[in-house]
Length: 219
Image (tube, rainbow, N blue to C red; front, side):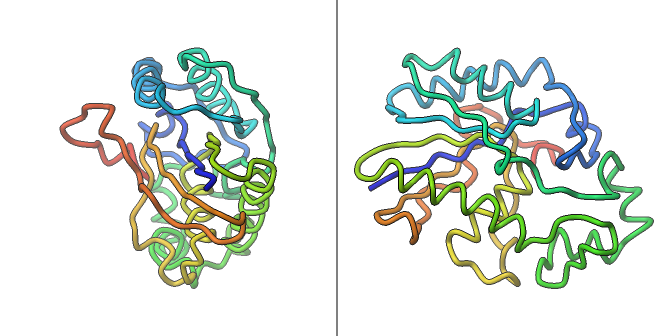
């Protein structure tokens, strides 16, 4: 049984400001995020990892490197461009409120009705494209590490949400039913054959010891 631990990157300045970062925008991690990554590492130190994979975008790459610095084990580390965030086209860098004002139907479908999302309006990637891109990478990793091994992937909220549900064969109309993924969260899938996946844990942040998550923590 291969277990795959999916980590969303630490919280950034643009997350706090409710701005879309996407595949081309980026902003630094908040100072508080480094402490949260240390807490994440502490929660994972009893788990042996065969490999760590990360998106090349700085917010994910720094999260992965900080996590590796705090794990009490040496783990091979690979950057893979297939793990980058959802390319959000014209929405990148915009505040959520500005997107809601300019493209209300686009925002509503992106957040709640992926089966109705028209990527052409904002020149973004589509949900099927992201699911195929990230899903292909995850299946490849699982094939490389069959048996009782653990893998760790550090990526992004929108891309991971789409891809994880895609790996679970969730219908497009129900892709968002589980809700979003929070910064520095852990979601775990398991697989026996690198083709069929089961959910073990969704969006766990208990190790951060937060009484309440801020709305800007989750996408």
